[in-house]
Length: 349
Length: 208
Image (cartoon, rainbow over all chains, first blue to last red; front, side, top):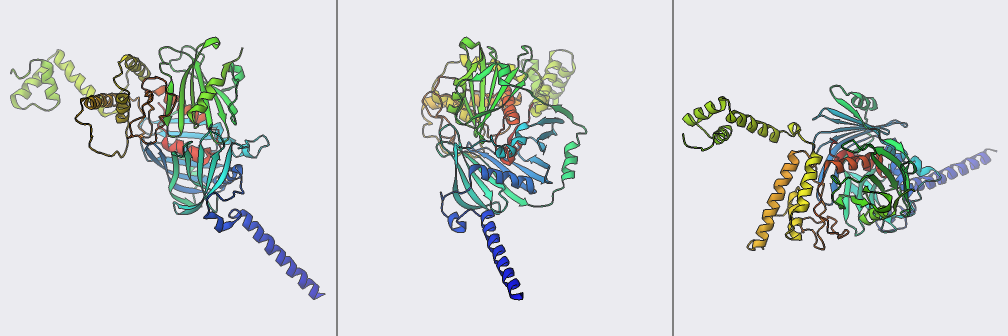
């Protein structure tokens, strides 16, 4: 009897150990382990959305403090100090800009409050987009990311952490690519590059210094965020509407991009009352805003394209049968994609 | 006291601290006396204060100024495509720029280019003072030079766009507003958190 129990116990222990190692292998490095990490372009078992969910979960579960640097291919450099705290349900962040005019940005979930000490003004706004992901990623009608493929790019040590490099390669010419450095243990994004169609880096955001799992007091950050003494508070809440209601449709959709929402804002100089319509599209990684307003000969003088880092802007006059309109298309996509949106935009009859 | 022909010149020299002794006394007397000299004294000080502190630069809306400036520019004759590109490249702020001697310094054409670049740089200063241009050096302006690539000093700029004969693009506060709106409502991307949001919080110029 005792021998049977002993054998059963041994078998159970072996089973548990075997399962444990299998789980550890799954949860840890991708299939292939250390050997594959040295090989670029090795088969990637995690999909694009799995990498993104991992990145979001890291942000939801870990506190961190660090110095963040934004650099654009054109040579500009900005940096900021960041404190991030979370308690499972809420996330709070404080970002102190170290470059340019002093500025403190606080975020609690989707509420963003920016303090401008020089002008003693506080901007408060709700950013819907911040509440979208990763929920959208897990929903059935989520983005399929079919226009991107995940490829391993090796490993690298960044800001003192071992990271895995993942390349999100666009499958057509309508979008940019990305290179993501994901911290090995937590999946936290340590560095991200936006790559154009020729492989050049348009923009890079990276931690130059980072400490993960340091104690950051949520209530202290919340207190700082709520303290608006001596400041004038300005709220901006764009009015939600629909493209249909505003009379617009995209006759020829641009591959991969889904409409995400439509807002109405004031046009400067008041008067006309029609306002500016903002129609937002996204393919899951890149977003495009189409701003349409009534054409004004005084203000709308030049058509053309501008590039600032990864953000492209297209200015175009839309006319003909549908009346006189002015389009400003803004997005982190190649200029021809903005042109495609401009071509497809039509007025409803 | 025939040093200056116009009384305002006395005031200008006084404001610059160039006078001493009797000339100083004379200028002070002029500034105290009612008339155009005293008004000039006040004006010079207002100018100095505004130049030293951007907050005091209120006045007409910048949108109007930029609109008029753009209209004037549209009317200006274009010399060479390279002139426009160089002028714009010179007007942009870059942290590290190689200082190699110009091989074409002797050609008059390039002296013209340098002159135009100075004018553009002056225009940039004026625009910065009136609070039009953002502080961030990373913001670039794309020039629509037909065919001709943007001057090499700007390596990663996307010059290969629709080669329309559009004139020089100028950043303006309206565009800044729309960019801010794009960041606020248009950031529907899985990369928003934390990359996109942190990028915007680090890089964005404060809205007006």
